[in-house]
Length: 175
Length: 241
Picture (cartoon, chains in turn blue, red):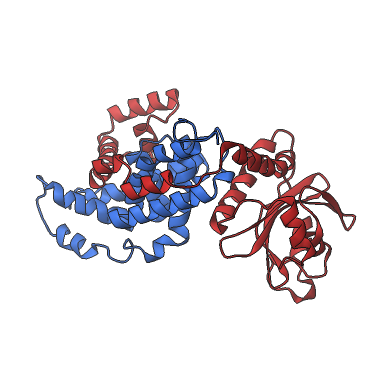
């Protein structure tokens, strides 16, 4: 057995290194710590079972993130909290708050989360990868296997959607 | 108003993704366009808000159960991974060398509603393609009704227990790759790459696309490791049961 945890480039070591990014990604995609950890576990199990399909020498993280995203789209989403329990009511209540020159950060967090909940999956995933993970368009394109032009257009729409929800009433980001 | 500056431009600017000349032009335009500056600021704040909303420093450390899952996994030694990769490459090379058609040629062949098959992905029973899927060992090329070449690259089981095969069909200068799975004595394509005309210089892109399409499908199907030749031969001899 050549492979061991001592080899920095072993699949096992690379998978371990990928876990933090995978966790953050799954949390943002599912919107919940519990669902995020469940999704990360499914992705890791699937990655381990399909390692023969991973190209040795290539980067592990994009591959694992793509597995997680596919798992989310195909099955996990349906039984997750996101999409079912969305704080839409909170949104409307909050929108009545006036004169938000000084906005409590808690309110912004709620609005942001509601805005993320409302985004289509294929938009939220891009905003997550760019804003949270700091990925380049090229990297996002590799993870999702979509053209860079698509990354750019979805990203700008996702940002705009979130920005609009964050604007105080009366100073809306124009269309 | 700043109708000439799109959100997409502002967004790309935010990420430093604009080419230098566009970047310079945008910066000049921003100097005189307060509305566009406000939009840029709103987009920037959206990113900051998203980062703040999902800030979770503890996620920078692997959760114990996830770390244990990886540490305790029986992961094949590198040697075996490379061997499996070679098997995968054996069919990828021909794709990269000229992915093409099949929506036309093989599409007609596969999807023809001949025999009342309403499912366009179902392989007509009794046809040449069905016979190849049933009988041809992986790695060997077979003439397909004199119209093209059939090659199975591997056989494997998927998550729901079905047996599937990765195959490539070449007709003339073009080819398509796909994954067909067997159920109730019938084969059905779970994925079949779209055909594109084989053009010089376009191979890599198209090949990569085809490979990624297949990869995504294999991941979705929860494909297991390819069967070795002996196991596959036994299945062929036993009508895949």
